[in-house]
Length: 159
Image 1: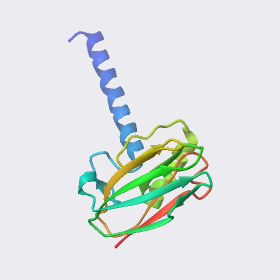
Image 2: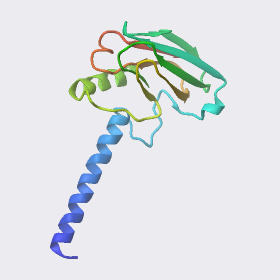
Image 3: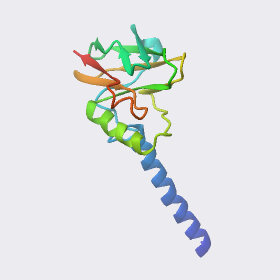
Image 4: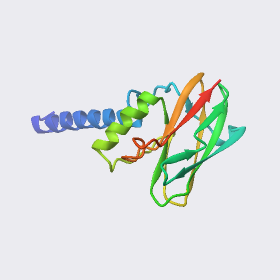
C-alpha cells in the first residue's frame, strides 16, 4: 500500500471510530448502543398489552407526572404535545437524564434518534414501545434546553 493510501485509510478509521463513539455516547450517556440500559429495552408495539397516554404542555409539565408498570411489561407510550413549543420524551435513569440535559445545554440543536426518545412537534403525537426489565424508579424528561431544568420530568415506578 502506498503511503498516501495508508494515510487516508488511517484517517478514515480514526474518524469513523470517533463518530461511532459520539453516537454511542449520545444514544444515552454511559451506555454503548449494544448494551441494554438499566431502564429496559425497545419493544415491538404489537406486544404492548397497555397504552399509556402522556401529554406534554408549555407549562413544562408531563401529564401524568407518574406512572406505574410491572417488571417485564411491554407498554406503548403515546406522547402528545399539546403546546406550541417543541418538546421531547426521553426515558432513562435520573442520573442519565441529568447528564444528557447538560449535554443539551452545550449543543441545543442536537437531534435524537433512539428507541427511548421521541421529539414531538407542537400539536403532534409519537409512540415509544418499551419493556421494563428491572424493578425500580425510572424517569421520562424533556431535554429541550431549559425544560428539564424547569421541572419537565415524570417518574415511572416499576414493580
